[in-house]
Image 1 (cartoon, helix red, strand yellow):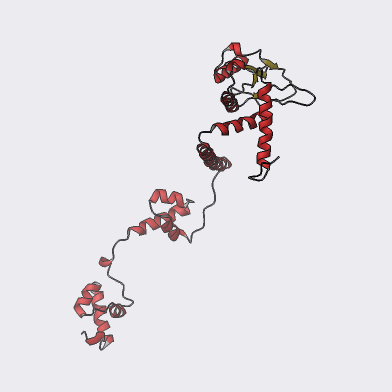
Image 2: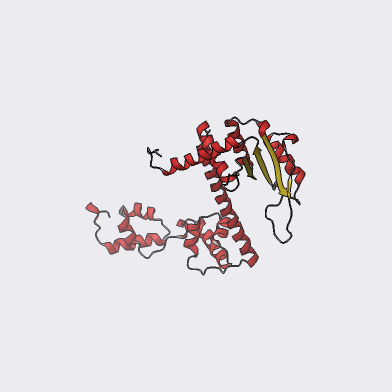
Length: 290
């Protein structure tokens, strides 16, 4: 029945034979081999409208999944819940149930609040990780200070936090007060750089009277590695019941006062150095004329 160049004579007679074979339960391949028709388009035209025999239909496992997915969707399940139960992709689920109405939200106010809290905690954790990463990168970028860098840092630190001479109150003494252990360490390292002997240094603690005074005294003594003979009497601040203090808790240890005895010359050097820093920072680069 095959003709050259894919042309077929007497199409209707050929169709009748193809349909008859189909109704006998033949597969497409069997009909093709029987009629010697190897053009799929022609073969499909010959069998147009004729359903395949049942034995040629392959079972489709996705049909069962699709039916189950639709059933679950009608029960109000979300895509995530259906995916967990059936193990299929969300894209397939979306294709199978897109004509079905979306389920109503069934979260209670408590559940919604718990979900929101969990999301907020995750956001805060990410922010904190970013914050700590930025701090650590900045810490590593500083590296070890040169003697000149430490000198300039110490002068600036003292001028910001230390006692200063006034025209109406000439004292010219070196007194530094702070509650930050890091500031205390840097200040002492600066004094070491300037050759100030530890025997010339005296300390005393300033703290609220209702705090743990003994623990604060031990803490500061350990930090500066000094014995009790280097500490003067602790100053206790009277508590005002009308005020609400925020500096409370185990980490509150008051302030440490550091005084350098016979420090008039040191104070003058600090003051002069500070004005040198101001001049160096405000004048154009390369112009240090007075």
